[in-house]
Image (tube, rainbow, N blue to C red; front, side, top):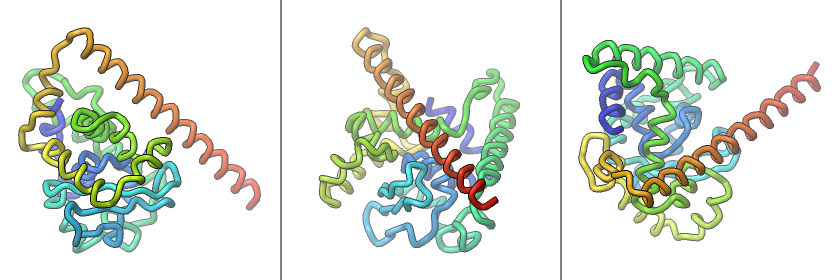
Length: 238
């Protein structure tokens, strides 16, 4: 729900607002966002294009995405004054501990938000994945599921996406950008929040859930492979 996204966003400090607004509008994973550097941003372009480097991408495949005007307001201070050479939002090299710290901080903000909510604990199962997931759903409504999958980096959809020219890809993002605003209403978000439960719409929701589960399996498989590679590398060193 949009109000949950916004409610939690208001509890964040400036750095976390920058991080999660980027995850929302770019469909990037949190680990990918944390490792962004100023050189990854093409700020002279409209919309601002972001290069997701292969070494930071979970799929180990480089791709591009875009930053919305709304998110840029939160990101710009860290673009101009990055916290370190390792990334705009981190002071030390990225590790799994970096990611765990963000998860823990997000949980703290969620608890704070629940305590301030007189209607009850509506965020008790809300995770940082919901920012990216919400953006994916909106992207699917504006264009289609294939576009959303390509934008968030699922390899089987990238080849077709990159057959489009850079101008065409930018134009597609221009169409989706208003829908990826947290603070402005839009046709797609109204549809998302008020979607009725006719049979056709139920089928659409079910298909989207199946697609998300397939992506989760793909991510888990890739993560397991990367863990195995690190373990083998560690054994070799020993």
